[in-house]
Image (tube, rainbow, N blue to C red; front, side, top):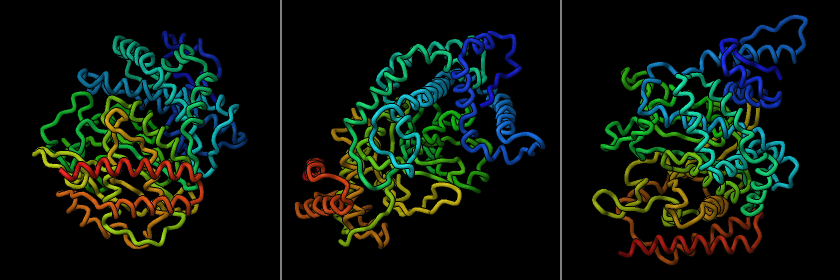
Length: 488
């Protein structure tokens, strides 16, 4: 791997800082700084002419150097945006947090290889364990990390330093202040062992965050009178290059604006903001390719909680879960079966008038409840059909009395237990009517739902009877608690 230090920083204190790095740390720096475009480097490399009489390895290194220099010139916060001191620190905090996280992912990966971990097939996302391990360690020592981040922000503001390369350099220079990567890996491995519940069905998740909730997108232009003083509804997402630093978690700005709709916006809405999304299954930013995250719903549930804690400055909003279609069951789902799903993972709460509603549907937040999609793992790879459950409300652990594990298991059991070969949308109108006037479900409906999803787990054949029976009891308890609210 070629190493890179920008000539524009020669004879500055940053050069002295760079010289103190080990060769390994310099490599970590280059990899993290190149970041997103390193992942899709073929878009850059195909523009470069091959050089005669030079080896492919040498050509690759030369291209990395060329690209790194281009990134150095590009990844500089504009003076106009830098002058916005009201939003500067929150955005810088996100940048430094993601850079530190990325360096920990790189460092912890090798340490994890020495440990005994749950099985992760090659068909699933290759950095699932390093990402989750780094996030566990980051969150367990959050106050320590936050203190260092605040000091680094003070430093770059005092220096009037707007270069993201310098931010990455500062982050890699402090990684030795934390516990060793071996210790981090052992801590994470213990958590893996505690929460692991391996299955046979590839699954993935996408998480949306917003301090404005359902008013985050351009199709809700008046924002309900709400304000987001920290991030201005992520209006400056692109100005702070958050795509380039949040790529490990599939960082993405979802404005609900597509194609020509974006081009037709007035100039003032050129960057309208929207949901800050972690699309944990995406491999590229044209969003053409994706991989399942894992077969292990216990670890995916843990990952969801860790991600919420990691980006605590932005409120959790919604959760999309997708499962690869292996086979469907034979029982035709009825309206009450879908309503059980809503009770489990939706948002039963009170509207502004104090009326109990299923808020995600009643507030017209959803573009789909359950959808069947096609996912392509990579160029030339076989397209996989997945079922996406997009109705779930995302909440922090402090704001719910349940784990996401039984909720995820209910979704998986649903598609193994019920016949979904017909449209997944055939009951949406009934669900919408119920959402505006929810009534309690009968014991017969609840028992039918639980029995069917449990039969789905047995059809999958991945979980022990103990896990199936215990999870069924958790689901029943949650369903009955939620259903009890509808009697009053």
